[in-house]
Length: 572
Image 1 (tube, rainbow, N blue to C red):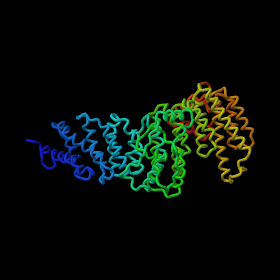
Image 2: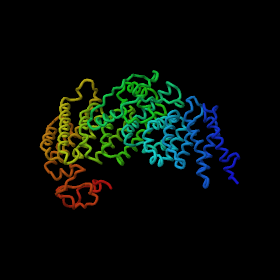
Image 3: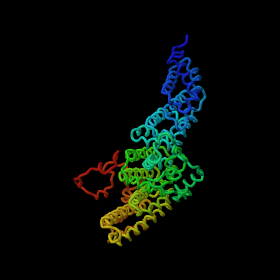
């Protein structure tokens, strides 16, 4: 006697299979195959019965697979004018392929790509399809990572459009997927895409105003490019600091004009697939007009949410990069990070949050691998030369100066690199001393408040430069004579800021006590050993007696201070 579930009654396996088979053959339903609400229910019931079956499982899967495959192809090929969404139905069939593909020797890679290209590219803005897509990817991420590792890195731009359209409601699920988007081919462009998430929202809203709803039609127009040549040029830019010539034509566009999908900015932002080339749309004239229109108009809820989400996405991206990525990719990423330090969506809170994460990442990468400083000598010196272009570039120069001194330009064996970086620091110091003597408050075009702010920024930069010079000379003793000359010029300068003057005098005094100088100013990643040298990182395990007495000025009797050594030493 046949099992009730396999019998011919309503709700049985054969009943649902006949319904699906009829739907896959019905030519009248070809224009809108997902319009029958019972179709999805039948697919789900067939999947459930196959999972629950024991003895007849292989037979049931073998009978269902041809019907599922034909129905999938029909739904994927549904015309753009179809009213019903096929996304949820296709995802349910895809789950069947992933669960039982091995039993029928079916490789689901092609089916997954068909779903992304034919369905998700049109329905990414549909909140139901977007949520079900992320749920599907999260539920199957282990299988996707092991069997289809290139799938998510290839289609991450489409997933970014999905989160840009649907906002914080799907943020938690998107964060679970973000690590799967990172691969050798997507690592660099993914960073730029995360940085430009607010710009993507602006572009999507421009499409929406120009062409109507985002649901139902693919808006991406991807031009073919010479990917191998551009990748080589990108690596050259990363390691040498040179720029890539952009041969594409740029067309201006303002917010009220019809959308020009041939514009390079929109080609970069609205693409569905990762082509392996870093975005260059910030050099497009369209950016300034588009940003101006976005800044002058009230921010939409989607834009506000993207400005809050993007820094959180970058935090996770950088954490994964520092944990899992090799030094070669870090060397390629850091120059791109530096180039975008002053180029981002002009929202004050967003800019502050993103720049904090960019600088923290750069310093953490140098701390992990100090040799990177030597490899990236050219991009670093270029950024030092741009220190006064704008406040953001000044802030970046401060961090780079600190890193150069803290890590001894890459280590004690990097003497040639240290000398070149030292010369750049000298140049930066002397240029600032010359301008401070001229008196910035007297420059035309600056009001008193602007001049005062700029003077304070210059003094802060000089403090970092002076410290970097002293630390670099402490690590590389052959630079000591030149460092004494540089610091003496600052100490003799009567127009220097008091803070800069005090630092220069302090460092000159420290250099007369080499052991103490090495303990205080020595590189944290190349600490020496010897009498009077204190490794402060080990201070938590040392007694006061381990500290050389002349560091305490041979004080006797009760402590002359109201703090303990625990206040000075790094916490565990």
